Structures are given as C-alpha cells and as structure tokens.
Length: 385
Image (cartoon, rainbow, N blue to C red; front, side):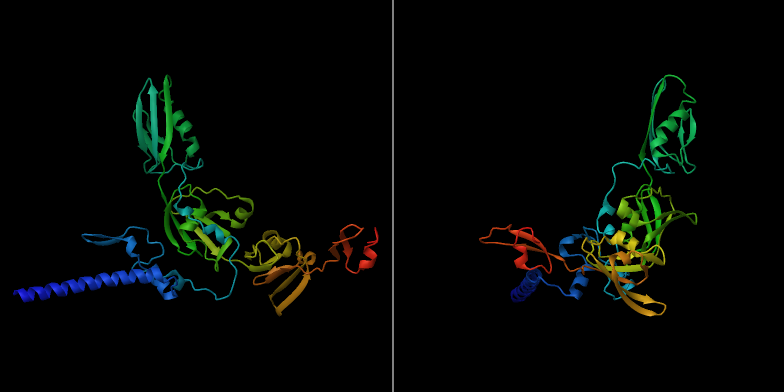
C-alpha cells in the first residue's frame, strides 16, 4: 500500500468514526430536548430497552433491568388482546387494589396457618442424653426421617404446631433427659393457575401463605371491564374451596385465609351487573352488584353520598325501553337498580335560611340567620326575625 493510499484510508475511517459520534450526540440532544412523545414513539420505547439499560459482553447484549412492559419476540401487546368497549366508563370500585408494587414484597415470617408440604425444610435440634442436629427435608410421602426414631409424618401440620408435634413424636422413643427444638426453615413454592377475567392468565409461582391479592397482582390484576371483584373462586381438585368478595375486604379489611397448594386455580368470574355512580359522592366509581337487582340503599352504602345530597337521577334500560327518573334521596333507598343504570347524586335543595352580616355603625347584633322572605326592615328590630 502506498503512502497516499494509506492516508486516504485513514481519513475515510476518521470521517466515519466522527460521523457516528456526531449522530450519537445529536440523538442524545434530541431526546433530552424534546419533552413530548407521540403515541407511536411511546409504544416503541415500551417495546425496547434504552441504551442505559443495556450492557455489552463479548457474546452480545443483555438488559440489566427487568423488562417491565417491553415485549419479547413473538409476544403481543395486551392492549391488542383486550380492546376497550370505548365507553367513557369510570374505573371500577376497588381498581386501586392493584396499583401498588407489593407483588415484589416478601414477608419476613411464615403464616402460622401454613401447612407443611413435601420439599419444605425443617431444622431439628436434640440435646441432652442424645445429641443430634440436622436440616430434614420433607419427602414426597410427607415424612421427615430421624435416625433411631424413624419417619415422622409432618405433611399438613400447621407451621405453628410443627415444634410440639415433632417433639411429641420423638419423645415416644427418647423419654428421659432429652430436649428438642424444631423449626420450619424454608417453605417450598407452590405453582398456582390464574384463569378467567385477569389481564395475564397463566401459571404463577408463590408461597402457600401468599394472599390472593399477591397472585392477582402477579397476573396484572382483574380485567376492569370484564372481571368480577365480588366473586373470586379458589378451586382445588375441581371443587370450589373459597369464594372471596373484595368489596368486603375494602370496607371491613376482612380477607379469608387460604393456604394454597400446588395446582390450585384462582378463577375470576365474569363481571356481574354494574352501576355507574357520579355526582356529590365520596366514591364516584362503577359498582358491581351481587344480584341482578339491588336497591339504592345498598349502593349508597358503597358510594357514600355527601351530606348535601338531596336528590338522585337514575337512567337506564328496562324491558319496555329506556327510562330516566328523578327522585328524592329517601325514595332512592328503595329504588330497584339493574345492570347498566347510571346514577347521579345531586344537591338540589334551595336554602330556606340566609345568613346576613351587618357592618358599620349599628346598634343591633351584627349577624343574622333569617328566612328567605324576611325583609331587612323587620330584621334590624331586636328579636324580630
């Protein structure tokens, strides 16, 4: 290669390198300077990790963070699979249950009602006349094995009772001068199926003592347009062992305890009759009814109208067509509501008493509560209003 050819080759290489550098800098400045993104831009950023999230290795690149909402090849955007009804509906009552990030939280201890299952590890200490220390694993038959004692069946024993139960079994062999301490060390994860109207149905792993909210959040929560918050079934061996109403949990804090086992199914049933509530209420949500018909008193219990609510407008459809009615709040308590009704709580009472404050030079009290039709001339006289 001649000297001239070498200089030309070097200059071309530098030009390409500088051009690439300027392109990267321009892209960075453009992304930092532009504060608004279009819908298509937002979708593209959701489907690919950013530069700061990607690390390079000798064999390729990989993301250093969780993929969040980004899609892998062959996956489909959930918005394409679960289209909206395009109605401008308020969120369902209880939708904020799945807004937190508690699916990544783990409890420090075990549920005292957790039932020992195969694969769990139990720490055993024996001291005194006999010395023994070991971590025993529960076998497929639900037993742990202790030398000179034999197998002890611990399957389905509560975590809070495992110490006393195993101690009693050991003391059948070692009757004198023996101290025993037993503790559940680790619990085996269970595999649970989520089905019905959830965002991402499928199979999920967790602990047997995890709450049903944990598994529902792992699956993306309940489908707000199709799923029921009032009837969630836990199915084991094709039989429903528990029905859960999340409205009761929201109102009272009561959540039934379920000790999950491998193969259990959490089924979110289809949404029942729904009523849309607006107006002067504390909870302007979409409420689900447990029955086909429900009276206004039950709806008021969940929606909690403000004190000034005096009238209620109800519109919807019945067998003979659409209807719209306006009634007092008292009459609404016994009104029968049905799926699709829209309820508007209204403050429609005109005040019959007016507050008046007098300023300047006067001999009478400065503040009056008078009836709507009282005259100023009559009210300025002491004790006349």
